[in-house]
Length: 293
Ligand code: HEC
Ligand code: HEC
Image (cartoon, rainbow, N blue to C red; front, top):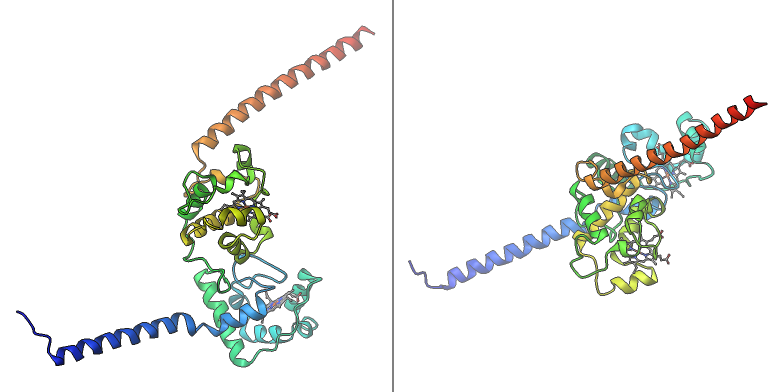
């Protein structure tokens, strides 16, 4: 049935639009502007020395610390670490482990402390790594990203915006012997050198002359950044000497690498056999020589 646009229905839909706009603003505010105060404190006062997930820096990784220590212990330690190290066994051994670094006393209000501890707990429980604003991945890493990142890195899959494959200039671990470039530094365990957010920033805005030039008009997409990052991170977690590039989603080694490994093993055995035969000959020769005397 046809409904004429009466004044009444016009106002109704205008009201609806206004409501939708208000809702949107509300969601945006909740997501962005009402930033978790604990994150803010951590980013400005603790992040330079501590990760939450992502490994030790100057100080220990704080992932799970809210489960390891009691709330009272944490509050006292964070405010007065040095004083506490003189009377508390756990604090003392931390100081020993991380010497010569010393955590400075942190003056936090009660609210800051509470929201900080809540943030650490939330991130630890969800397994999410703390990243400062700006240097964030667009989404959490999935298992398949390591492989996709490897395909991007090696040029098997092209970058959407036409960036040059990383392997043109970089080798990574054993993969280097598969034709990885040598113009840029080997990136095995790059993550050990760079903290995660720093690495993400490099992928967003590389600050090295050659790379800046190459990627200025060919930026990686957010999705590609997640994948290449996942791959580089994986290269740290696996032993730097392992065939990093060869691992697939399931952690299984690709047939190509197995075959190469097999060929090398056979070659090595043949070579070893050859050497040993010669030695045998020499030993026997020595004995023969000696028995002559
Ligand atoms: C200048 C570097 C630095 C800063 C800044 C810093 N810390 Fe630390 N933190 C350390 C070091 C180093 C240790 C190990 C103990 C020591 O040697 O002082 C430590 C230890 C800790 C521990 C004990 C961890 C455990 O495993 O029990 C907690 C908790 C902690 N810091 C929280 C914080 C918080 C929260 C902030 C920010 C409000 C912060 N730290 C700022 C360097 C720092
Ligand atoms: C045209 C060659 C080239 C390409 C392509 C390239 N890089 Fe680089 N990259 C370099 C050079 C050269 C450096 C070293 C710059 C310096 O030390 O000043 C570098 C440095 C780096 C570093 C810092 C390494 C360190 O040890 O300090 C990272 C990380 C990195 N590149 C990642 C990548 C990734 C990921 C890609 C692919 C998306 C890529 N690069 C593509 C040339 C390249």
